[in-house]
Image 1 (cartoon, rainbow, N blue to C red):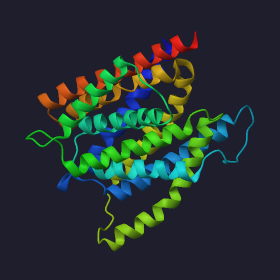
Image 2: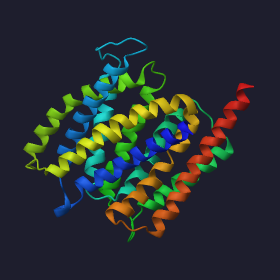
Image 3: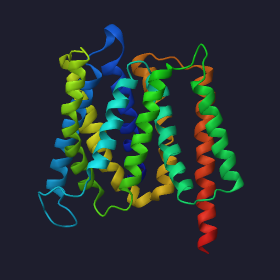
Length: 294
């Protein structure tokens, strides 16, 4: 029961990132903070909370203040994820943004496996084809289709998070590595600020917008990631990938409850097809792996 509760809290935290991001950034007059400022506050607050968690828990049984487990490539992937995520939510609703994000995370990781020589079974291909077709339908032009540029940015965000996840597999201390990567990512905020200023887009933020960004960085990102690593050790990678498919559903419900976002037939149908297709592919791959191991 404790594991189930921790898993549920983690998925709610991940979904809350989308709801809070849309709530803070919004569009037009509803914006409480600009995307660049939101990204900066989220990364800074996440870095601070993760650093405190590392100092409190130590590393592999040792209390060490050093942060040397990350890399600049992973830090840039984290930075790209956060910035593309923020700019995408200028025009995307919470639920559809989360769906595109997690679909592209899975697509990136599956694509890498194919590149490394993985050969999916027929059932895996069927699941992947179903999910890919539904994704194309979701973003294709139409009255209820998402903004194409925002959808592309969220796809980029998902790909960046997929790269970050791939580079983090097998690390002996993922919490420490994440804290290090968050701190390294702050260096990229300097060129981002320069670009924003040169583009003539001034930074703007209300107190509520800053507070939402801090909550997203410190709680739903920092603490959420810490909980996720603890849960992942007990449920395994395959089950972890499957339970993450609940995040877009939770985000859609949260967007409806807190932001008044409407559910469209295209969103509901494509969500079921995308999540179902990916779930079939993941389960089929797990069974194939188990057969090969015998």
